[in-house]
Length: 521
Image: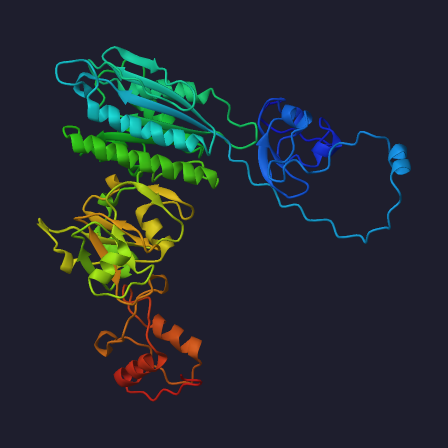
């Protein structure tokens, strides 16, 4: 039997004393877990959950939340206890507390990092990797270390060049990537094939019974030109097969302009391929930040049971304007240029506006954590080749869930969002604080009284509604509003705000039909 597959037993707590067996909170049975392997426990007194080994628990370790005050194992016989303790009055029976169902096991991540160490990745005429590329890789590894604190992670690293494919020792968590020497060509297929062969042999199930996923990260500044062991057809076929298992994710950083070609040659989804300017220091910086943010998003998804993704890279540069206009609505607000360092309240009040928490949106200028429930506003930087002045920005927004979906972010949770995703779009993040520090030279969007969580405030315009349904019968409030929405053309307004009397006036005026309405406000 596979050692990572929980076996079925009539007594799931057979290997533990009874007072510990009731606090065992794992899908795998105790007898299949080593004494020194961290396991999940749930306190029988305060319901707190924590990690501890079986060995520590059997040595007497108690719940850290209630300071070990849960009942200790009995040390006296039942008879001795009865003789020493007077009989107490019987207590009324209370219904047994329902135990919450255990969280689904997440498993672990097996990560392979493949670093291009061909001659073009070197620093001038030296063989040492260029500084900006090394910093970008360190950004990725730092985020892997942060993710490993949430999901158990193993990291295997290789660098590849004219010398072939060589392993790189990054140590155990926290991982560190040492500098590498660069020379020769780019045996990209051999590097991917080596990583697949190694990760494939690792366990498919974690000790908690959850699935072990594979993430293969590739950083290269060129196309394949030096492989000898693995053919193109073999690598493409294996990648196709593995991606179909829903446990493998391949993500590649390639030269800008080679994204579609790489997708055709490898079979990796285009959403998992990002181009970077290989000849620019800023290009390497942006690539590192964008990949780090995407790694953070991947780990956030793993904590929620996601095992693979076809949209690894969060990249607003791939957003087309038509998609944005279709998926969002107009945000009505003032765009202010931040000309001094100040808190958001002081700056807004200094501009002559009444400050209300939640109406200010600061411009994203560096990577940060996007908190749950924050609304986003985006706007195009340029119109053709010309920059759009702040006063003419077309501000677009949606509900927090809609904006996350538009940017390819996980639907819930606190997730990293990086500066490197911006492209030709400005991103503004809702501030729910009064003392948020604004950065000089950035923009601030302050809404004109609209509640972004409720949709846009719209006043009906009779000239835009040639196709309203003929309304000839009596309607109640909900039905009338619904039918007006059904009568709109595809691609028209989907969210209608305003009083029902205003909407009624539009319908009556435009159609020329007497419409009666019950309970009209």
